[in-house]
Length: 301
Ligand SMILES: NC(=O)c1ccc[n+]([C@@H]2O[C@H](COP(=O)([O-])OP(=O)(O)OC[C@H]3O[C@@H](n4cnc5c(N)ncnc54)[C@H](O)[C@@H]3O)[C@@H](O)[C@H]2O)c1
Image (tube, rainbow, N blue to C red; front, side):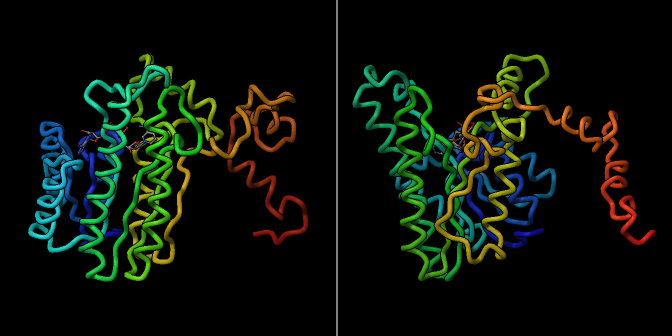
């Protein structure tokens, strides 16, 4: 258990990425405040966690409301006596998602509402957490960004703009809070979803997206959750102001394999041609072929 006894707060914890993060933090021994505005999903998660013996406390709080945020952090202090980890995960959409669409159609009101609510929420939760963490001279704030901060999604200008701002906020806050040993980092996932049922439209879409990613699949909430644990753990004491891609290598490639200028030899063809593996993909036989013994230069065991 890497986070035994620590207190964490995860915003937007009721589903998808936030849910995966909250579950993993709790399984690593943290006491976790689960924040969301969807009461049924939140209660369902809390009940599941308690049944598994995990220490959680659900809080129904809209993080763009400063009064709700203040009372949520008061609950953290009352329930668990402090706060070590804040995960700014929730993204707040306008009710009609009117911030999306072609730039020429987006209304200023939707743009303003989306950006102001999300930026305000980031400020409110981070400042409330910082007030507790600076007193204890330790803490870890982890902001969930998106590849949209550095790679444009089509017709999601407001979202990408917010994520770019979140990354600047991360760096600036890291420097501001460093004197109190409060670390601030961000994770930049690409597409994230739980594995959908085989044959569903969601699965087909995820498979197509996965084919564009060097590691061959989209991210799972657990992939993001593990990186949160890494950044929250005491052993990450010297890491602050960083933004980590959680994207299976997507941002590092210049283009997907089918668009490379030269034909790309498939791994299985390469392995067979080079005699590295047998057609059954038997890993032991590969180890034998590569071991010093097989070259005649090593010591025989
Ligand atoms: N899902 C992806 O493919 C993906 C990719 C890259 C980055 N991300 C980032 O990961 C984070 C989580 O994404 P997701 O797909 O799980 O989002 P989601 O929309 O599925 O879930 C967000 C959660 O936040 C809650 N929420 C919304 N408004 C809130 C408010 N005002 N106060 C408190 N809670 C509120 C929602 O009820 C929901 O449970 C986001 O920051 C997103 O930008 C997601």
